[in-house]
Image 1 (cartoon, rainbow, N blue to C red):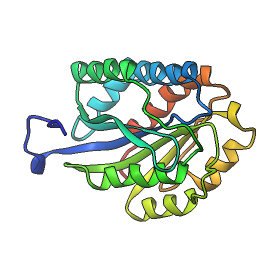
Image 2 (image 1 turned 135 degrees about the vertical axis):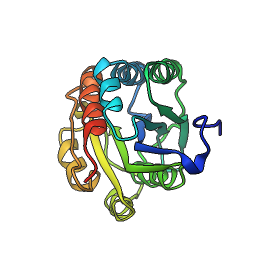
Image 3 (image 1 turned 45 degrees about the vertical axis):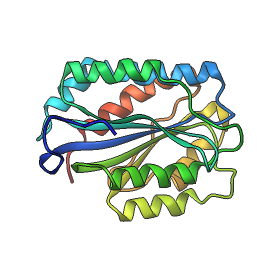
Image 4 (image 1 turned 45 degrees about the horizontal axis):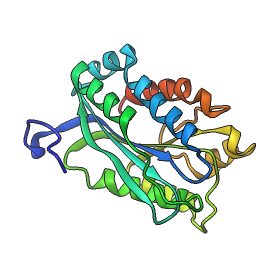
Length: 215
């Protein structure tokens, strides 16, 4: 893994360590995938986000992107990045807008995605005041996983899970995410009615996650 900053890892502390866990399973076509990546890049480029980061105690956050599909397919699409100003934010946005889709055809391994995202947070090479998984997707786990159990384990380890369910995939996806995915103090949902609404929902969600104070 590339260095995350010019400081020693032992001295590095961030306000927020955030994993963007993005559904790339078979229900997401190539056009929807591109809308997701462009939406995340646009959310990062929102000037309000840089202001929010600068308002934190440490004035920096850490960001990772995880692509997930079936239960044996999770890929780190963007390794940990420290975002502390315009240059670092723009670099992350640019790389996300160009990242290729990493996935395997098959089912929706949502539980496994939560487990792997949590492991990356717990194993991060820096300290964080808050640790959050941002799960986006358009379907329920259909590979015999237990998202609720993985959610509870993550929360017990001090991780908050927020959700961005895309409602075009399932009319009941919002209630599913509310009952089986999100959890922890201050956890929340920002639904997108269709994938074309993803960018707006992600911008709102990312700002809320960065601005949320330490409890």
